[in-house]
Image (cartoon, rainbow, N blue to C red; front, side, top):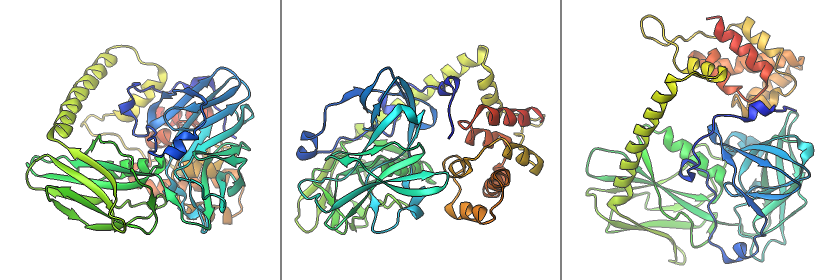
Length: 442
């Protein structure tokens, strides 16, 4: 188990403006589910770097995070750090007939302080959950397991905490599964007057929505997110066909889609909307069988023009703050972060010293027994890589070394001490000390 000191909680805190978080929980439009939602004490976490949250709870009780919908039942004062993970990284672990039931989370704290966690799910159970079974997929140092839940409600799945690592709800059902849906809009940033949009249709699942955001960021084009009410007014079903309609008419590709929950897919499908002229227009998502409107929005020029202006103001403010901060003294941790971002040689090129095997074996001896969790959560290795290492049945240090070598092979020219420092920043102080030593050797 990896424990965190009080100092390690104090990551760089981001502004508290909720628009900085892509993960703000979207409330479903569902009278049944909202009516039965229990009224627990609502608490707003601090938003840290790397889209992580921190809750500081002062007493025993049940608390609900306003950002993610997670509910924590605690038995004493505790600090809880957590973030939303991608299901696609763990796709091989979700085996039919089980399917994703809600977001996947990585929770870190002293597990003895937590009695239970209630995970939000993205399904509408209505009055047809008699033949549904919920479990929690729990990824730990020995692999992955399906653990029983205590109970479930129309909005949450309750799990008694055994240990902490990536965890999220899965479901098995003999009946049709109904999903709360969300429509996410992005507009291509283009100097041409024409308009091009990506329209993503997703389950109301924060892991899915986070994946969409990452997919857009890694696109060869630049996009801006368009802020429109995302919640579908009608439930989505796997296998149902939907079409997107534009008023006035636009080029829409594809013209219709068959909905599937794409939580486990690395590539997220979308509908492209193209208009030659920047005009005000409406978008409607329609279920083809019933012709009922599932979602609609009206888009105006101010939706993206104002966004551009806000982005420019934000950039100027950020640059100004950065210049002011550079004039003051920096804590040791910030010095290392700065060194990782800006290390210049005499010719102006960044130093890119790759780690040696001798350095990797030194680091491997300090990583401890949690190598599988580190491989998945920190180094983003594939399950096949982990299986290759486990098959050799070597001691822990050699497993750690082979894990680091797999990461080095994956990163190639980016397998530097700087990048490994970023990946392992939340592992332990001793590991950070070794990596800082590597940085000073340059």
